[in-house]
Image (cartoon, rainbow, N blue to C red):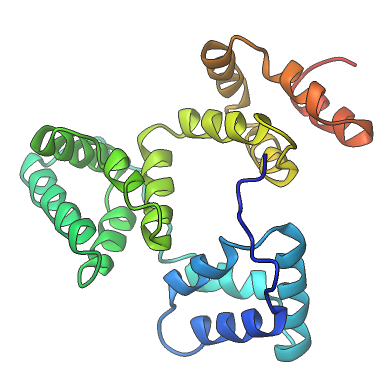
Length: 233
């Protein structure tokens, strides 16, 4: 089942122009990038990339990667926890998400400058103070593209294996399969933690991931993914 609801009347040129404005000059408009690329399907993103190259003579993906690499690179090092900092930043996150404006740069700062251990302490403090998880709170703001991105980041930080299992569950259920999402997870996790993700998938769905994938796809694409999943065919 597709996970992206894409507009049928989008203009690749207009999207390319908007993305150019988002990445030019000092600073990058991350929200604009997410708003556009997060609401286009695979074919539309390819059209946008081609239009951007035709107009600006540079590769859109490489430009976006160069602009965002510093902003969204989280440091997952160190095991020390500062409880006072966790309390302070849990409050900052609460206010930023509640008001949605004014402190969104603080959200980026916290997520990109704290260790994974410290961030988990902050998320736990948020849950203790408010009676629900930060991730659950963000689900209530699904219409906000920036907060959608924050939700994904927090899910990955909190337990990335569970996050990827949920992605696979969503792309494989219902009518049709989001092949782009399926490929992305299997290929990027194949040499890292795919075995653990497969085990989580089985525990959650009582079906082996290999069998679920085999039912949904066919041909050489099927052989390719099943090979990565470690299933003989």
